[in-house]
Image (cartoon, rainbow, N blue to C red; front, top):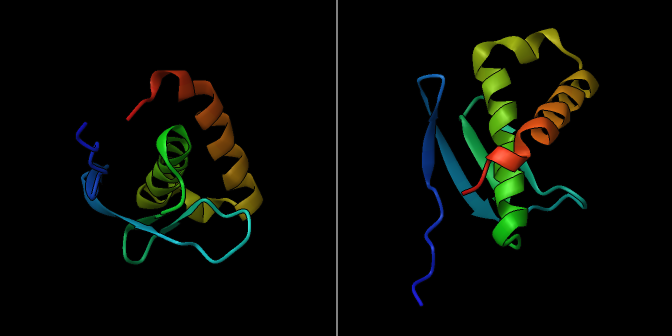
Length: 95
């Protein structure tokens, strides 16, 4: 059976966002988004649904950053908004 390939990049609000899969060093961190390099990093140890959920979560962070909205929020507010959107739309999102 052929292995499903992982996304290497995607477009968010007209900007190319690179996706990297690598071991993340911080305990409990499944992914992150770097606004300067426009890169989403996903823990390479995640597979299947867990990897898709982490990617979706970081895509929302990327959209907030690229749109400029993350600058108006504290990190706690941003995370709350991301989790709310993630929970509201997760059933419609699959990779």
